[in-house]
Image 1 (cartoon, rainbow, N blue to C red):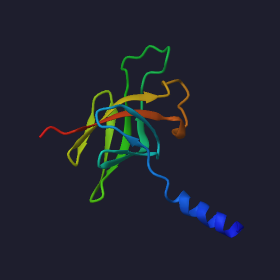
Image 2: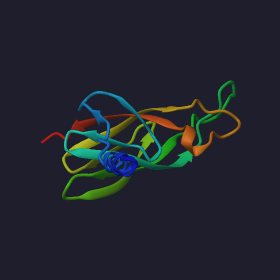
Image 3: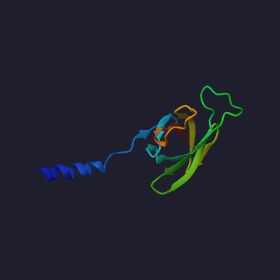
Length: 126
């Protein structure tokens, strides 16, 4: 009996569905976490740059954050990046916008697993 329960538990671990977000709606995502949006699966690979001005500091430049993305469908996987402020990533008929990055910048850089990005996925104009 115990072997059956262990076997079924292992079977269900492989069947955990990816979280699902809605087109045109913001969603938060951590490093390495996949999110399904329409026909896409979006995953943040790593923080490429975080040069944002630390909280309570006076900076000449506001800085920016750049994140590596992987965007997949059943047929294709594309790698790219998004940045805040400004840049979006267009691929496979969709546009991925980065709208926020947490935690707020400080003098000590956060650990990579502490980052949470807020993204919005829209269909590209045709």
